[in-house]
Image 1: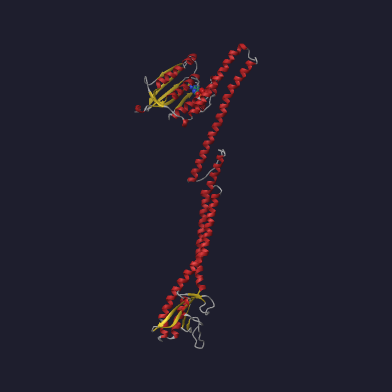
Image 2: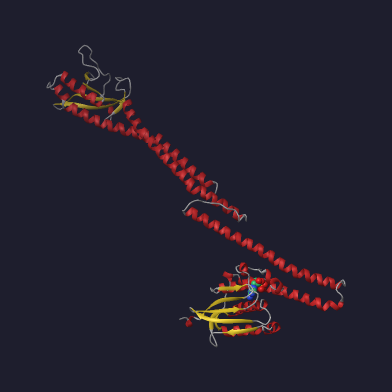
Length: 473
Ligand code: ADP
């Protein structure tokens, strides 16, 4: 399509030109000449009949002299640009506007036959060899007292008619030329407004089809072409972004899998070849176990993220008591909290409070947030979990007084595999997937999550939840 569209238009233009020219040069001249000859013959025939009934009859009834009639017909012949003759049935020329009458020189039209026009009222020939060129002749009989006395013949040179014909043809040629120029202008506009942008778009589409999503192009137009180009380049940007994300994702996954595997391999080899003495085996086996736990956590996180993948995420929405879920989740951290002497303080709206959401997913959100709060809290501190009802939404907040998040990291913590530098020392098992899972779950519910944090003072994560339909005020 790409290469032929313009050619097709050029071809159509050429066909239009050739046909137009063909019609104008082949059919129009014939049609015009036929039409003009008929028209001329008709008007001359009317003139001839008029002359036959007036001046010429007068000549035969001796009401008018030959000189008078000659004078009148002379001026008429100039006006008609034709030769007028009066001929007797025998062929003897009585009057000829081309040659003044003379008694000595009587001209006779040899083989004169008044029926030469046949069924038509005109004939085109040299009129019984009396003209050196072709003439259009009309013949009208002069009658008096029910007898044919003679004939009025009017002759016009065919070359004169052809001259007028050529004039008309020239007008047709000029019109055709103007049409061709106008079509050419349309073709140029088409090239500029449609074909060139289309070619750019097609080229870009080819590049994208080959996987070159970073290919850039620009169509400077506000019409549908420009809109199409913008959509295409937006699409490629999105795909390019996704591709980059995917590459980064795979790089991160590989890296995060490789480091625990390397250390597991290293410790196990050292134990086998005796570099680590048997009495230290238990200590290093615990390290190995820790690393395997990290790998398990990483795999689980990846599987969860894969299952979530936003738009495709299917939520099992029910009405459930969020207070119970908060209490149960907090209780599951009892052991960890005891080790760090951390207390979890709950400040919940009502004894029971129903929300409309996917229960197990929200439990996971709470689990990840409380897990982080504990990880990044100092010993002997308090973590507050609070719910507040506002604008038909329930806001759940998980607040700690731990290390806090540096301002520059606040936007990044939601991205997959992100771990802030300050947290690395404190949280060796962290995968950097917890908060991206949290965000995807909350967003899939059509809700929001925010963080307020000051480095060195602590962090607060707040997310909203919808209420059951009946509870909405
Ligand atoms: P991880 O599983 O490694 O904790 P997350 O996605 O849950 O990954 O968190 C990403 C990063 O956000 C953490 O590495 C940490 O730097 C920061 N972060 C999350 N929660 C807190 C918190 N409560 N206090 C301080 N930093 C936090």
